[in-house]
Length: 122
Image (cartoon, rainbow, N blue to C red; front, top):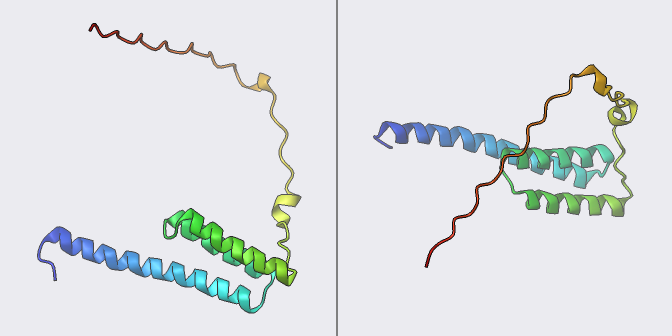
């Protein structure tokens, strides 16, 4: 058991972080096993989502997640599962671009000149 105050705090933080990381890894494993047991588009989407969350939190590296997602996608392809585009993206049209006249034109500053390099006298 640590005696120093900062070491005590660090130990408490480590315990909390470890629990959070273990929970996230368990979610990844659960989603992956669910997809492997019963391949479907929603299970594939859930597994991909869990991997993306882990990367965002810094729990696994980006390439590791990409490798695992590729393996899941390959299994989905062999099983004939296709990932369906979400209805939200297809249904929501993009708003029209606003006219430039509505906003006053901002005065553009000229680019700052770089100082000339000093020549060394040898």
